[in-house]
Length: 115
Image (cartoon, rainbow, N blue to C red; front, side, top):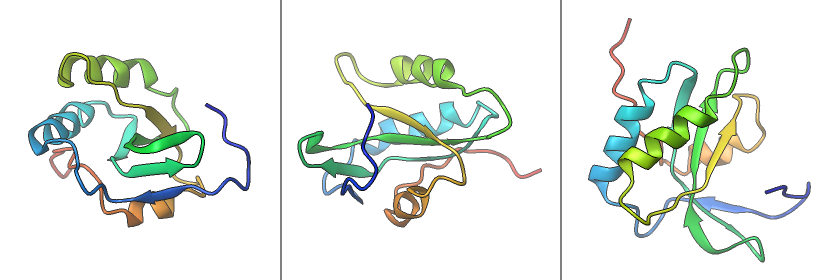
């Protein structure tokens, strides 16, 4: 989906997030993909486009490596319950939307061991 520049988007924590066991499983599995730097699951609303509001998975990826979209889709197929759909968006750390997404306090634990 292409969103025109200047479109107002509301991004925040969901009142009713997906179940914790699902979000934990998403974080654990996506943490195995080295190109992914961080993952967030905020609630997003854009009048007429993302209406009603929905949780969207934002994966912050390494700008210098090919995007892992296919790997992310495979993880989501394995982890999400049958007939459960979630939009996925890849961002780079320089994306101007990232501060608002981070402010939603919806970052998932990727369960990576420190080096």
